[in-house]
Image (cartoon, rainbow, N blue to C red; front, side, top):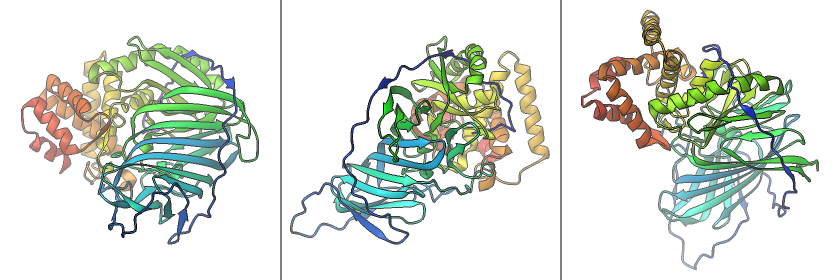
Length: 496
C-alpha cells in the first residue's frame, strides 16, 4: 500500500485494446433453498448433498481454530483447512450499494476428523450454503461464518462450500487503516465506479474467505455489471459477454466479465472494479504483457507512459528475478488517498504518479509473491517497496540513492517513533517507520553484507518462499546463508 501523501505519482501508458464481447445469456441457476440468516448465537441447517452415515455413532470431531495464529492480528484467519480456489460470482452496480454474490470455496482439511471450521465474513444476508460432501449447518459469531459438518472430514479430504449472499456491505473502520472510513467495496458516485480496498483486514467485507496471507489460493471472478460498463479483476480476462438477460435481481440485463488468476494469492490482494474504463495495453521489451483500465480522459497519458512501465518492470526483473505473474497493470480510481498492490491489477489513485507506480509494482515481488506470516512484519513489505522505488529513481545516480537514505536515517534518528519496527501500534501499521525506516534497514543490510550477497539473498528468498508467506526469522536465515555470517547483532540493533 502506498499513501499518496507520501509519494508523488505519474500514471502509465499503454496501447489500446478493444474487447469484442459476444452476445450471450447466463445459464439458469437452480432455485436456491433460502433460509433466513441466523443472528449471532443462532444456527441454521442448510440442505445439501447427503453422505450416508452408518448406524454406529460417528467419532468425535475436531474444530478448526477461529484464528490462524497471527499474534499481531489474532482475529484474522482460521485453521483446520487450506483453501485451494475461490470462484466469486458478483453482480455489481455502481448506482446501487446492494450487491448479490455467490462464492465457491474449494479447500482441503488439514486435520483429522474436522467437523467445524470458520471463515472470515462480515455483513450481508446469507441465502444458502451447500457443501460437497454432505449438508452443513452454520452460525454467525462476530465477523465469522462458522460451518458445522454432520460427518467429520478426514485429514487431506477435499470439500467444497458454496455460499450465496446479498445485501449492502457493512461499512465500519479498520483497526489498522486510519486514512479510509471503511474497507471492502467502495462506491464512488462521482465517477460511477466500484473498487475494493482490503489491506489488511478487508477481504471478508465482500466475500467469505480465510482472510490472512498464510492461506493463498487461485481465483476466478465472474463480474456482472451494468450494460456498457467494464468489470476488472486480478489475472487475465478470459471471456466477456454482453446483453446477459436477468443479470440483476430486478431483471435488468447486464454485461459479464470473467477473469482468472491461476497463481496463489492472499485474499486481501483480490480486487474487483467496475467503471467506465478503456483498456490500454502493451508488452515490455522483456515480454511481460501489460494491460490497464483507465478513465477515457487519461487514455493518451497512459499510452505515452507505456515505455516507462515496460522499462520499469524489466528493470525490477533484472534485480530480483522475472516478474512472477501472467500480466500486470493498473485500474484507476477516484477519491482514494492511497494506491494498493492488488495482485497483477494495482488500484491506482488518479492523483498518483511514477514513484507510486514503481512502489506498487515492486510489491508484486515483495508482499504479493512472498507475503507476510504476520502483519506485524509489515516493514518487510513497505520498507522494501520504498527502497526499490528509490533504487529505481536513482538507477543512473548512485550518489542520489546514498543521499536519500542518509537523509531518511537522520530524520528517523532525530524523530524516533518510540515503538519497535517489527510490531508497530495498529494505527501506525502504515506509518512512517514501516516505509522509511524499513527502507533504511534494507540499505544498511546491503552495506553490511555487500551487493553480491544482498541480491543473491533477496533472489533466494523470493525463490524459496514465492507463492507463499515468510517470517522475519526466515528472511534473516536466507540472508545469513547468502552472506555466510551471523546477522543476529545487525537485526537486534534495528529491532530492539
